[in-house]
Amino acid sequence: MPITPLNPPGLPEPIAPYSMGVKAGNTVYVSGVLALDGAGRTVGVGDARAQTKFVIETIEKILREGGASLRDVAFNAVIIKDMADYAAVNEVYRQYFNDPPPARYCIAAKLVRDDLLVEIASTAHTAAAG
Picture 1 (spheres, one colour):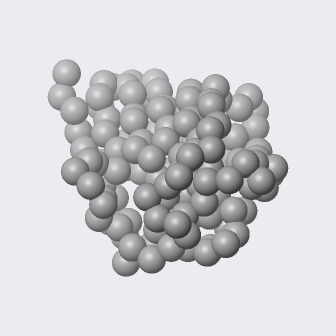
Picture 2: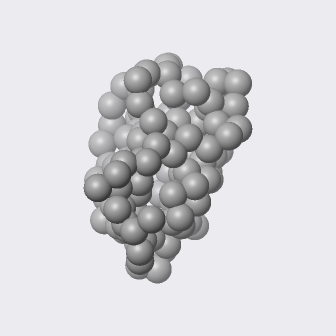
Picture 3: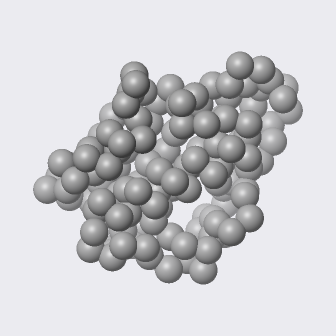
């Protein structure tokens, strides 16, 4: 089965050797997305809500490149820097993933830069391979 890299224009270059996402058959895998703009600058410094919104909207762009949408997401891995931001992250997350929400886990961990507060990786399944 061919694996197609997904690196939509306008997103920052990955900061390590990986693709922003890949499509394999009818599954789209999105790497951990951070609140980084096209120039690699942090979006929403100090604001977990703003970063979560930016991260999910970036995931949506990557999914679209692979022929999927947020409705196709079956699983999310959510990583937050500080559990004090858990409610704020969930407030925004609920606006995008709600009927029914995908399976997920959420852990607190140090992220690659101190000003980053949230990272989300997603797995989506589409109706047809492509």
